[in-house]
Structures are given as C-alpha cells and as structure tokens.
Length: 420
Image (cartoon, rainbow, N blue to C red):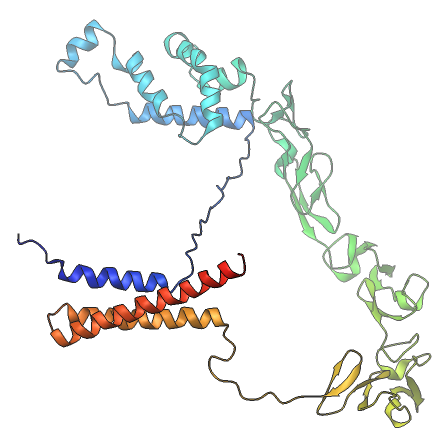
C-alpha cells in the first residue's frame, strides 16, 4: 500500500486549530444514571415450597427417558443402579429447580436439600407425595386443602367445602391466616352460607345456595320485584313494600353551608355553591339569591353586577377604569404602562441590527470562527497545489496569527500596566 500523503493533514490540523481558537473553553458533561431497583415481594413460604415441588416434579418428567449417558447403559444399570433412582438424576433435577432470580426458592432449597435427598433415597415408597412429606409434614410450612393456621384447623364451612364454596378462606393451605371467609358478591355470613345485603335466596338445597340481586334500592327483599322490598338502603323509606326516595333537602337531614344550596339525588343529596352574585341562595343562578353580594344590586328578581366605572374615577394620572364582576380596577390608558406605581408613556424601541444584542466577547468569538472557516476553505484549495490559493492561504494564516497575537498582546500589556 502506498504511503498516505501528508498534504491533506496540514489543512485538517489548521482547521481544528482555527476553530479551537474561536472557542473560549470546552465543557465536559457527564451524565450518570442511577441504578434501578426492582421491587421485591416475598411470597408465603408455603407457596415457595409448592413451587419448588412443582418444579422438581417437572424435572422428573423431563428426565424420565434419560440414562447415565455412557456407552454401555445395560452394564451401568446393572452395576451402579438404575438411573431412575440414581444420585445422578437427582442432581440433574435439582440443578434446574430454581430460576436464577428466585431468591426465595434458592434459600428454601439450601435449607431443605438434605430432606429432599433423604426422601429420594429412603422415603419415596412410603411417602410418594413429595409436597405432603416435605412442605406439610417435615418443614411444616403448609396445611392440607381446606385448613389454615399453625394447627391446620378446618376453614369455616368445613375442610371439604370451605366457605360453602362461595368464598375464599384466608390462609387456606398455609400455616398462617385468620381463616376468615371472604365471600363472593351476593353471599355473606361466617361461612358464606347466607345471602348478602341487597340479595335474596333464589334457590337453596342441602348443598347449594343461589342468591340473586334485589330491586335497586332494596337492602333486603323476598323477590326481584320492586314490591318485594323488606328493608330499604340508606336514603330510602319503605312504603307499601316499595322503597321511596327521601328528599333530604326538605328535611333536616341535609347540611349545607351558608353559601350553598341543596339538590336532592336518588338516595342522597348534594350541596352546590351559590352564584357569585348571591349572599345565600335557594337555588342556582343570580335569580335565586336571598341577598346580593357587594358589587351587585337587585334588578327585578336577579342580582346583577354594578358598573362602578359610571361613577368611580381612577385617581392616578393617565389611568382609566375597567369594570369587573362585582368590582372594578384602575389600569393604565392605551400607550402607557405601569412602572413603580405610576403610568408612564411607553417608549417605542428603535429597530436594532442583527448583532446589536451580542456582547463584545461574543462578537470576537464569532469573528474568529468566521476567519477559521475561511482558512479551512483556503487550506483545502492550497492542498491541491494551486500556487495562487497557496499564497492567499499563507497570507491569511499570517494575518490571522498576527491579529490573534496582537489582540492578546494588547490585553497582556494592559493588564501589566494596571497591575493585574
């Protein structure tokens, strides 16, 4: 490969030098991103143990057709032991039981690895259910289905059908929880054996209960019709087996503020704000006022805004009155602006040039950048061997260097004279 010509290097260096001189400094910015931490929610130990056993059983299914991997499988099975119950298979299964990110599974496996080995070699025949043997009997982390708590007590409704089949027993299957039934919608009672508020018994036999919803405002009812109500929800009154809405606004049940009015709703009421023109009101709008607010006056049946600007005079010079809702304000007249509490005539700014707002230092930087670009262009042309452009390029570099040195020499001399 031919050596690269150095004729193109000089223009590049000069371009970089000229642009560098045009900038007063360089700024390095380092951005650091804080590490993100993922929230960790610890599972119940029983759930962790159940997951470990489920993963172990899947590992057994995955390796059911495997062998020792040697050349003579028949000999290995005869001399060593069958792969089915071998230590090799156990190790292979345990290696894949816990995922890398499952900390709780790894911790539980470390604590129970000797128990798993004991079950694998000695207890499989008499205790084929690993979950029952490990999680319930040995580690005492879990309870049988339908039971809860340290002593594995039956859930309400019995272990066979906890919560009657219409709810969830808190802590079921674990050594914790209160055993309280969380009933499905429509069911209630200690063991979810009754219909909840707003529902009635549609069907019932020795083993099943079907609860259906009452008519809207009924709290208790004998059927789905409006006339089947036995008790009403709050805000309703029972009248001839029907629930009728109570108008709280016509009774003492409503409690609204002095500047509010009451609006009846189905089963309740709302307090809404009076209009700004009112001091107390009986309804919405300026026509339902009890009294008019300051800045408003009674006109017919409504409280309307008073135009203070018809009588009020703004005291300041060059001010004018502006009416507002319920009041007024004094503002500067057109062509004036407020300054230190008085209205002064606005000065129309003269048209400014493009560089009028730039500081002297900014102009110097811009000028140096401009000369840098010109020198780059001349350097590129001079690199092609053109004598004319080469002469112009050398002259421009000399002029730029002299200008740059003279600028700084003047500043150095000035600083020396002033003692800085």
